[in-house]
Image (cartoon, rainbow, N blue to C red):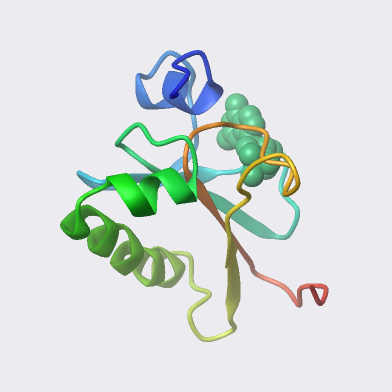
Length: 115
Ligand code: 5GP
């Protein structure tokens, strides 16, 4: 069950500001408030999905396709296509998902620690 009290819903509805790096009809990308690497951007769906599982199973194929096609474009805008980057999504409590609105982390801009 999607809970509209989460912070990303407030960002989407412009109740809370964010440092936007990219936006289209399907997703919004902005800088993480507590970056874990030199570049740390969050890419969130505009549709209201609680996590990746919900997004992958409930969003239309077109939306899922569009969302994932946007990621390398965002990496390119950030200038990290050549140097490399990591994408990750936390799902649920064992992954320590904090914000219950589907998002991907995009990390880069420096050599990242191994997983
Ligand atoms: P999760 O642990 O849910 O995968 O990641 C949530 C991320 O959202 C964290 O990296 C956290 O720093 C970030 N975050 C939480 N609140 C805000 C906020 O108000 N603004 C921004 N830009 N990032 C936030």
